[in-house]
Image (cartoon, rainbow, N blue to C red; front, side):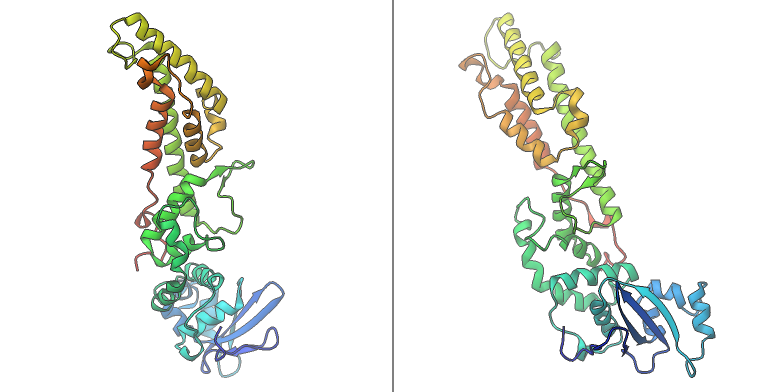
Length: 340
């Protein structure tokens, strides 16, 4: 944080962000608190949330109390709870144009808290240019992810998902949400789990990831069922055997062999139709690797039937599906500031 930015020495000390402010924000974070003298007019101009809370046409209790308060005798006090008082103070400095107290760079953890508060109070537009400059320093931390890694971001930077969602970085958001779709599992509480307790996933994005993930699992299971059914009864054109042997009996024998082998492999992998409920608990990445591993060993009667290996055919179908997974479109899951 900038050395020019006022930092109270004692918890609860008054910070005069705006000397002629008409109200006090009494902010607490755990056992710490800090009071900020601010202008309600500035806050209302910057935030639809503050405008609804205590704007001139507001219908909430805070609005009535602010209008009836006499600033010449005692300032109106609004109590709020936040996680990071330093970041709140930084945001208030920006909104009140106290630019001498605004640093050129901030830590990534602070950037995440800026995104949290921006979403909470609808401040993404008001912070648009400053937040864009701050993000520039940390954009390299998702470059590796953007180029095809299965990791959400460099370690410690997974919450780029939230930052991109709040501030409208559509390309980054799409790629990171795709990784979540691929990596999510269902935990023991029957909840979607991304494997990171510190990851902040907005509710609408969480639901979007769950819906897309379920659809992909349904498609994978349908591919498995269809392949098994075809091997059991044959296609409308006859046996599925791809050899050009003139004997129908031999081609039907090939189908029977492939059916037995595929059932054995799917059973071992927990991917028979009766196991689909358990398989759905796993991640799509896990299923992808399972199908790759399942087809690593050759499975055919003889070299004339090398192209008939049902496991490899099934693997290729599943990989085509998985490789075509796309992330969420930001326009379908907008935050308040996603249209920046």
